[in-house]
Length: 269
Image 1 (cartoon, one colour):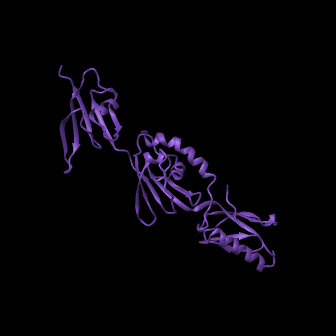
Image 2 (cartoon, one colour):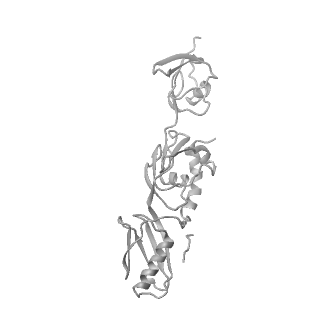
């Protein structure tokens, strides 16, 4: 027998998306194709024999220990197969005549996802169900870092294939971005593209490079011009393909590129 348990930045949109995760996290159920591994916690119920019911963790050698029947190898078995194996052991040992047993996975410690890059808590996180998704795992990792995380991430599957994830679309509810993960997958959230602005602006510094960011918008991001600043006297320093730095004048409508250094000069008048 089986039973089942019952345009914003990526960082800003993530807060709303977390609500979706909280509901899904505690209602996820195991699929019949899930294969058990070391570290998984099993909830075993032997109906009519509460003294035989238990919670047990799969050892590094792939075994569990049950009352009366001792050590049972369960690595790479499904929960259905474990139910059948336990029932057979109890019958063969003359402990039970027609046992009815339920096995549920309480913790999926053997299947882990690596989350790297610009998230609050990089590390490895176990799948909580066979339907664990990108949003679930990012929530486990504390979400992406405000202002520094990019709006694209890379999912590397255990077989080496790569999937690009649009985090902006993910946090706005696009189901195509919230793909189901498998053990051994890896998610990398890169740093957001940035630009630098200094000179005659109110707040010089490093800023996130938004899509289609123009010189005029960059000045606004830097708090606007000082009384002596001139939008017409903007200069950009940019690394060329040969690795050398180039400096040239730009107009207000010109688009910036990643790692551009924008300098706003004083007005001549």
